Length: 389
Image (tube, rainbow, N blue to C red; front, top):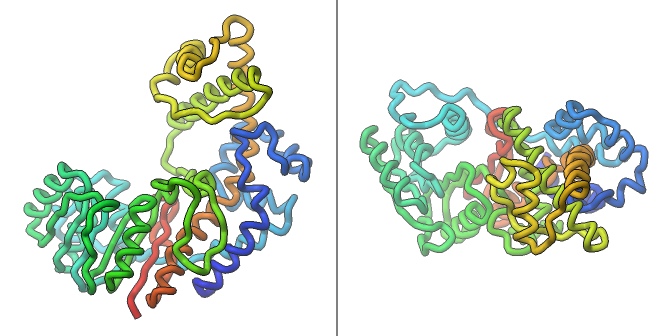
């Protein structure tokens, strides 16, 4: 399927199902779709914890469950079938390029590099210590310039490049603020540059005449002040920052301990939410991020700190116990009902990456949108490859 055709279909289908993926069960006790599809809600609320966790982690399975109640959503499934650009990563005789890289991160870098090819000078965008750029400089024998905001990481990366003996330079600068024009003819690479960082590279790079792009986007919601502003004129879907965040909520690396910590934190926050709703007529009100240390202790200690910060009286005795019980109940319900939202994560992510890809196509590039590694290595495995025609 052609890139523009896939994007057009997603752009048309996603608004049709907005009533399913836009509401947030954390904020809404019962999203409106529960009334419209009561048997769907009943099936979800009857799931045990193991089934709930499995469906929240498996988008295709969640979509298949949803399709039993809303058959029209099955039209999304063929749109997830992207070209797999997953060659076996090349084995480097000189392993020194991989100094100081954790195993999973190294595997992501190797998979990304294996899916790309080049013979032009490289701009390594938001490259940290420059691990990817160092591998490309070593493998392609081209000069690499790595842009990174953290001067300490630049110093470390420069030392690693010198040890390997490759032509890699570093620029310590903020990619969102620096007036650093990408040079025409360069090959720009970005592995998991977040939000506006990857959007700015594509906008500025296309204007400057970058010859090639290989970009694996990440954290699309970061740096959004309001809603998402599409880069492609062909995109019409309107997304809030929370909608965009939904696309990247999937994780595959969290262990049992991390999941328990997450569930505990959610239950504590929902217990507080139950107490505040009791005093304001049942209306949800957002609150600032909660320091991680606040959820390590008792629920009572957490409530004391939250209520002090938010200007509420602290519950005690039976009120405190009811809030804690309600938070635990709501955490289970939120996870159960969130399966519906999570069924659309991949569709939203492909639309977001497609918006970037189509924007490059509109600017005269030949573009491919594919997958550079298995989701078990990283769920952010979409790769935009563009070559100036």
